[in-house]
Structure formats: structure tokens, C-alpha cells
Amino acid sequence: MERVQARVGNEVRRVARPTWKDPRLLIGVLIVLASCVGIVALTSTLDKTVPMYVAKSDISLGEQLNAEMLGVTNVKLGDLADRYVPATPESIVGYRANSLIRAGELIPASALGLQDGTNRRPVSVNLPDALPAAISAGSHVDVWVASKDRATNGFAAPTLLLPAAEVTFRAERSTGFGGTSGTVVELLVVDEKLADLLEAMANDARITVVFNPAASSK
Image (cartoon, rainbow, N blue to C red):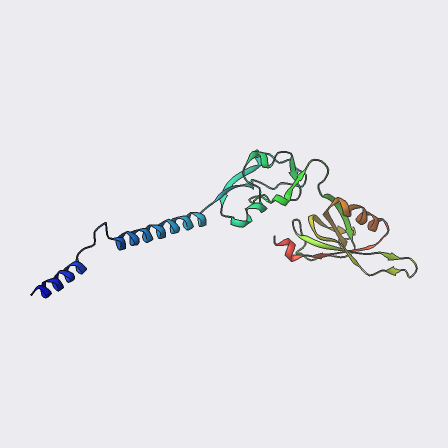
């Protein structure tokens, strides 16, 4: 009889409702809390937005940046945040637009140029041929130069002078008889390549621009 009572007592203890002193219940509560904290932290990270400057209207090359021409928008950029200008007044002090910035666009960090003369310079280049429609203001081109060979009255093999140069202007040259005789493009040229390009133009080198889709899509 005593054995039966002991067995019944053991069964009762096993099915009895756990109390707060039960270590299994405490461990379960801790696991649930840890999961909740992890989910909240992950959700907060995914939903994090940062205030960034955006152009209210088109900003031309060389324009002085100020708060009046910029709006503020909260966007999710994640690891790309460093590529754009945060909405803080000190981030634009002393800067001009180093390229054309379209209305509604975030301000790329690469589009900021200092006022100390280190900006890219706009240079107009006359090209003898028509250009693809993809080459327009804001697109990027690779500029190839073939030096003139006076001895053979031809040209040397072309070399890449300006990779991914930005186009700020394009216009067809008119012949005066309703036709066209080539294209004028304005390119932004870094200081260290400026002399080479001007030399090529002065010595009648053949200059060819090729659309760079990879740089234009950034």
C-alpha cells in the first residue's frame, strides 16, 4: 500500500502546474524574452531611415550650394549612406556643384567640389560624327585619343585618355543648310588630364567618345 501511495504521489508531482521557482519555466521565459529582443532589434535596423539632402530643382555645374535649393527626405540607404550628402548644414558649407544634379535626386558626395580650384573643369569638344542618343547631359563617356601621324598623314592607335568622363551638355553642329556636321559635347575634365586633352585638341588628334553604361547608371 505504501508503494502505491508513493507512486501516486510521484505522478501527481510530475503533472502538477509548475511554479515560478521551477528552473525549466524560468529558462523558457528567458528564451522567449531573448527572441523578442532580437526581433525588435532586427526590425529597428531594417526600418532605420536617415535624413538626406535632395535637390529641389536642377543644380547646374559650378552653382554654390545652400539650404534654400535643397530639401530633406528620410530614406533607407544602409551601406550606401556614405555615397550621399546627409542633411546637415555643415556638409555643404564651402562646396559647389561638381556636376549636374537633377531635381528630385539625392546629392551624391562625388558631386561636391571645393572652391579652391580642385573641381573638374568643363571643356567643350568638337566631334566630327553624330553621337548615340544615350550620350546626353548627365551620362558618362570614355574619351579615346588618336594622335595625328604627320609622316603617314594618318593617325596612331587610339589610347584611353578620360575614362568615365561626365557629359554636361550636348548639341548638334549645324551646317547652315539644314544639316549637321558633327556634335559638340561639354565634358568635365579633372585637372591632371586637362593639359593632355587640350594638347590633343590643339594638334588635331582624332577624339572619339564612347558611351559608358556602367558609369552612367551609378
